[in-house]
Length: 76
Image (cartoon, rainbow, N blue to C red):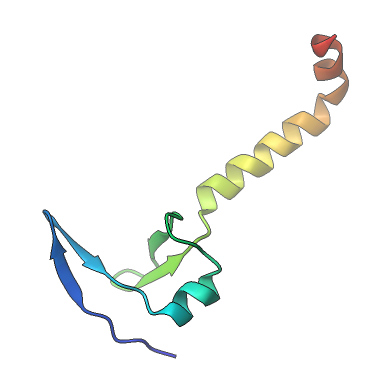
């Protein structure tokens, strides 16, 4: 499905208003961060998912799991 949106000037940038259906399908609220990902070159995707943050959270989870006993001892 395609949605036609218009750019409007906002300060030194351009702004786009997302249709309510797009906001609903992205499952985001006002003030949420969205990521504009170039994929493939010259084409963009709008997503609430940030691959870098997801990878960092997974690495954090793995460290916590591996050193769980050490962290418990340090917390005493």
